[in-house]
Length: 183
Length: 162
Image 1: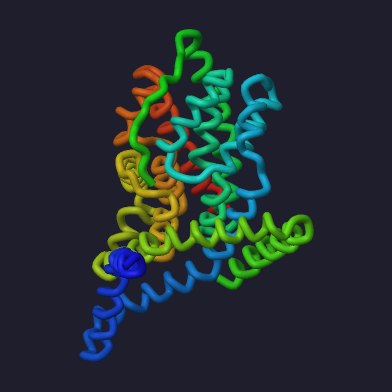
Image 2: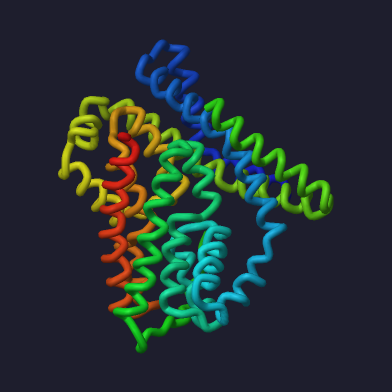
């Protein structure tokens, strides 16, 4: 029974892939040229992806077990100055997921006493320096592009952190919002 | 591609050996986690690759070069910035798309501004962000990041041409 459900779930997940492959095989069979062209570019994409993404995820898994995220989180509140900035950036780099997933972490940092500046530096680093994303970026756009983009971004979002601290100032607070988190 | 295999193979291989040396059990847990995460992204990733393969068939290279190529000027650049700010594409999906666009003649500046607005500016998620940080901070953060993204796009585009 349970196996049945699992298999159904897998088929559902790969539905489009199965449909696409069936259509590609049919294209070859009937000599339908557009289908053959689309399949061959898919194949190139697939080979490109499979050469590095699995390796990258093994690396991410290892990072996950070796780096104590919670302990770093604890330190951030009372560390200020350069150490604080380096720590928030480091913590942000270890995360994964979309930017709106970072807002709840911003709340945690706020509760632990992080400054406005550091909260927004965290958001900046979260959006543009996450290690899993940097890995994918290197794989697809090359080391040179990734390094340039990172080096230009880093000072800009530190600057944004300082600006946010100055402009938004004293009345700032992060509210806790309970939303059903998906994915 | 061979570069990728070399870079990722070397980094992952060495990390794996070091990790195994220190703690076999931990390494195994990490490996399991990694494989699980990878299997999780495979279906959406493949779907996107299919979609991009189909789209690229219908959009001719000349159109891409004309609108977002190196000589497309400010128009393509701003379109990319606005599209990136509005759309909510998961980061890992934007990379194969960007790589394909560059291969078809898009400029690095356009791709850099598109990717940066995509990850740093969120118009769709702004209401959610306002609930966390308040109106002033949320709008200001997005506005500042939009300006930063334009600067990043221009700088990266220029650096890539050197």
